[in-house]
Length: 158
Image (cartoon, rainbow, N blue to C red; front, side, top):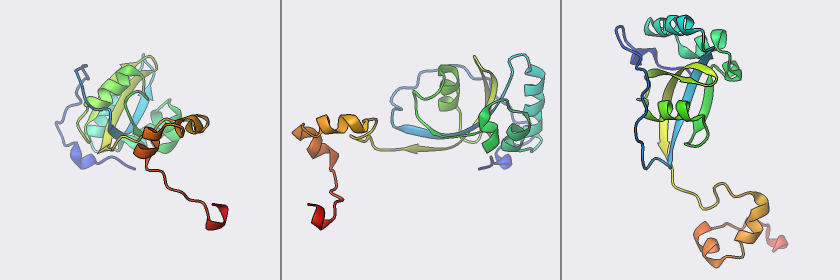
C-alpha cells in the first residue's frame, strides 16, 4: 500500500518525534510503513525526507534504500499494537498524525515512518491465549460466558 503524496505538500515539515504520554490506547492498532537507514547515514535520511516532500513515495524509497527486511514489502510493517515495537519507534508511531512522515532514532538506526491508517477494536477474551492454555480456561464458567464460543462441529460429531 502506497502512501499518499498529496498529504505532504511543498513546505511540509517532518517533525522530529518527542515522547509524550499516551494513555488509554490499548485497543488502538495502526498500519505503519517505514524505511530504515544506518545511524551514521543522517545525510541520506535528510535527502530521502526531501525526496518525499518532492512527491516521491516512501514505499518506493524503502525498496531502494532501507536496510530493514520489510523493504521487500515497501517498508510495510502491517497492523501493530502497543507492545510489539521497540519503545522509541512505538512512541513515534503512536503519536504520529495519519499520513505524516516522521523520523525517529532507535538502536537499529534512523527511521522514516508513516501511519497510513488506524483502527480501534474491541478487546477479545481469547486474545493472546495459547491453544494449550485454552483447555484450562474452558474450566472457568465466567470465561465460557464471556468468550461466546461457537460450536463448529458437524451434527454427527456432537
